[in-house]
Length: 197
Image (cartoon, rainbow, N blue to C red; front, side):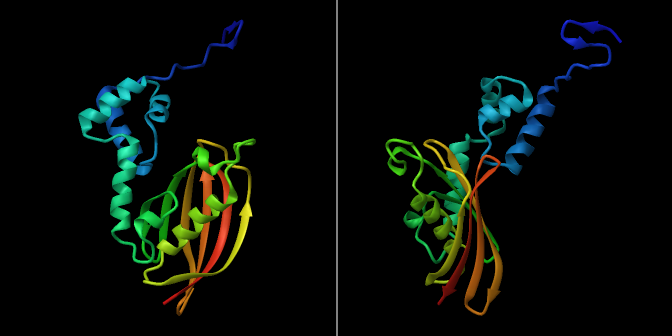
């Protein structure tokens, strides 16, 4: 093994670039697994330019993240009975009634305090509460109780992805847990008890 100014160099291998067809296959798989992944994140993952990712997506007929999110939201809203589409806080992107649901909300200037640029807890709570209600297959859903934990402040332009899942059901009462994250970091957790009619 030889040593250079930057350290040992003998056994290191350069990361081999994958071919175009292999990259496009992997790209489509990554987008299926995580439809919210951005072109910037994909470019960093594959070690190529954002323009290369855009060309790959165009060739395969995969729309940009904004359109993918919008398409998922439209499909998800068609299943929901308890909440109208315009009553959701954020965009409902996935729902399996009685099992799980997901929504995405970008923090905009009207959601934050002027001085600190921190998102008001009301918006984070509303996203979680309405997402949990959307999970229930009923015409009338009322929040009976909620236990909340705010883990860290959420700032202007951050994107909150909330995941709700049914923890327990007893007749017309539902215990639903919601975990909200910014990236991989948990920012909020709530346990909601709903009564449905």
